[in-house]
Length: 253
Image (cartoon, rainbow, N blue to C red; front, top):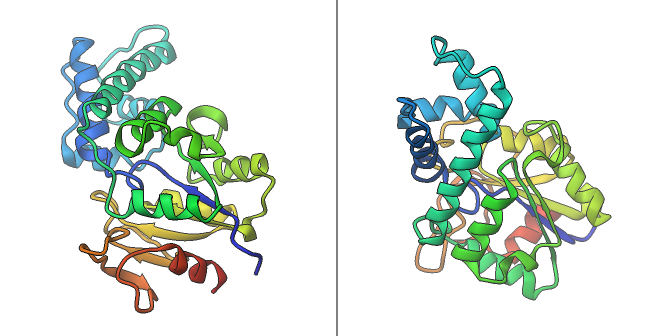
């Protein structure tokens, strides 16, 4: 096995549990701003998460749930406008500190950076969402910690397609054997495994019952010295929180 060089991170659900009380709330506020009576409940949003990408999710909702609604002639432009408003609302929520990082995230990122490992983002969310989360929840200069931020529509096929991971590794000049991925969802691990990456999963509020076959390790979160993780699948050895040593061992296993 090659030496571990690169760590590739999903964002929503992985770095922060953003979906239920972040993106969902922002979508609903954007709909209200536009004069729409749509309300995505917690349960409905869980169903919509089967579709990756915010614009794609709105389109799916129109096709499957809002079938009586007649969108404007420029349907794509209508969807894009709603999504732009949602992104504005969501990034404002981040700026106000309403969406914290998950346990262990800041610690592990700093460990990896201090060890000289190369970091990248591979996500379906928009670049604005990524940079706002990193700046406001991690560190004002945290965007610069990541060599590549592969996000949004940078590739045409979103997760579960492997394209976003392949694009990030190509830009970094790394092979899958030199990297490990961090995910939280079934679509995410299908994407990372499809790109040939060993993958560590930390389930989020919407993904606890999903299938993570093929994961190197499945945890409830990454853990902290005072907040140990729970192992849901795989071998964490004697570790009580995910540190760089355990990540290296999982990569080499």
